[in-house]
Image (cartoon, rainbow, N blue to C red; front, side):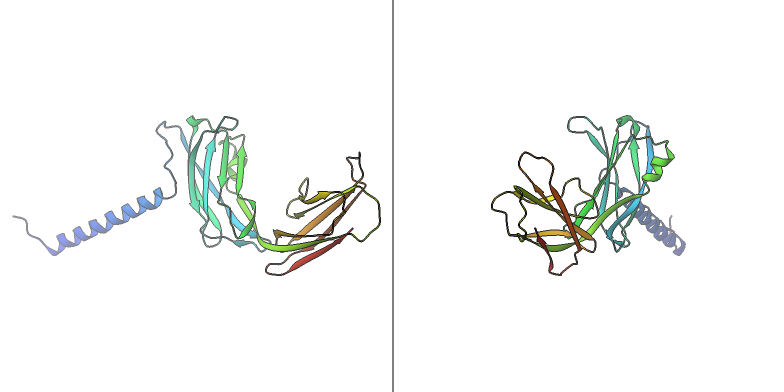
Length: 246
């Protein structure tokens, strides 16, 4: 005959607590992945992904931002891909998680991606790694320095005023935030007669320089006869205005 004792009840309670902890840990481990990578081939390696999601120039971290890493076959139609792993940033904007890569898949491109942040100017929310060599220390170290960058948004009014009397046939005007030197500015106007007086309302990055460039041309000449650049630092929640007199 079996008799319940205080010792038996204690052992049963401890067993239930231990089981609950194991199940909780298993659930937490599984949540690191959007989709459990297929490693049935036995040719899998574990890779660590580490980095930050920050707003510049303050360096403020963005918390709870999901980070996803996939591997794909670059150069192929539709780029077949597999999920490698995922995680989220902590309160300091930092992430650190392991991914599982199936070497038999033959991927040639790793992509780390986060969603676009509507309240910010997106600079880098997709980062790519090619020439994959998981025996290369430099590459593995690069995967631990994945940094996504954003800027606060600012509003800028650009007033274009015709005040000079010089001769030219047509003009182009554009702008770009100075975190990146664009080969060509973001176009605002390109035209000839009448030489415009106009106002443009644009969105740009706060707390760094925004550059405005305008160029004057003559017909049958692909090179501008004059190029001018002006700039200002825009602030959030301020009526930022610049006057371009040409």
